[in-house]
Length: 360
Picture 1: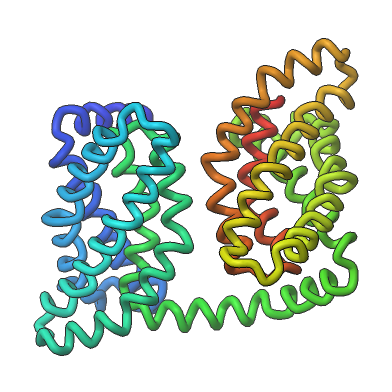
Picture 2 (picture 1 turned 135 degrees about the horizontal axis):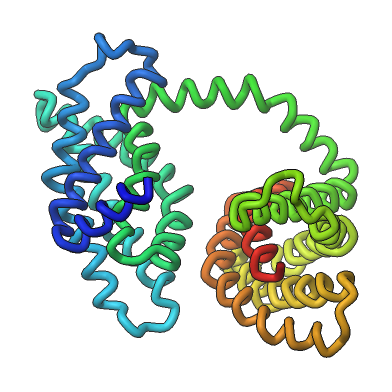
């Protein structure tokens, strides 16, 4: 595996246009194969290979070459800029995302023999759904891409994730209907019980979800990042993370979210104001408290805690402001107040993993 990745890295550095075109076309074609076999339940003998070829050709001839020059152009344009990854993500989602999705939605029916009128009609039906799906996932993906992934590997990173999105395009209505049925059948009962639990016991439910996700984040950090076996886990560290969520972070967030909702009720640009207040007050407070709490309960001296805080706090807050403003803006704009802690905690599993690694 290492030799394959090393070979791919050399190939990308020497032939970036060819490499990125090949990876994009291949993943788009593979995504469509997965769509037909997994979602539409076709066997390999009944797969519509002409549709697969159309998807792959779009990646080889348009999407891949476009991304090669687009990513390098973004990197060059924003070189040395403050909040570079955030600016790159915003421009990418304003320009590239609608452009690529528009082109593929027109290209697919036209290349399959549909008339321009039929293609326009299908475009008007599908474009809002596709862009809604895009903006629910790709801003966070691209922010991660631009922040952590070296430029020569960004197309590889995005193409691995784009395989799922290509599958989504494969048969948009069939997939959405199937996904809806699966979600309703598997999770409807659980979500209903959770919803009732939150409405009846908001403090308890939010404390439990926060503590559980923080403990889970520490487990993920130790098993995946530190590569420990389950028998070698530091359960004391996991307990300390979970306890912080159960006792402090969860109760704090419960009252904080409801207070924000009350303070900014009936104001203009309410979600934006709530996000700024949250990131100005709650984010530094929670991160500072956690960074100080962890070495304190581990028996460190005040001088050691102060030194660790000075080392870790800037790193944690830099990462916080690269990710959480967008997450919280989405949270305050789309999520009902009684489900905001659940949404934030789902995102916080990854965040807790990062903080657990930084403060280990």
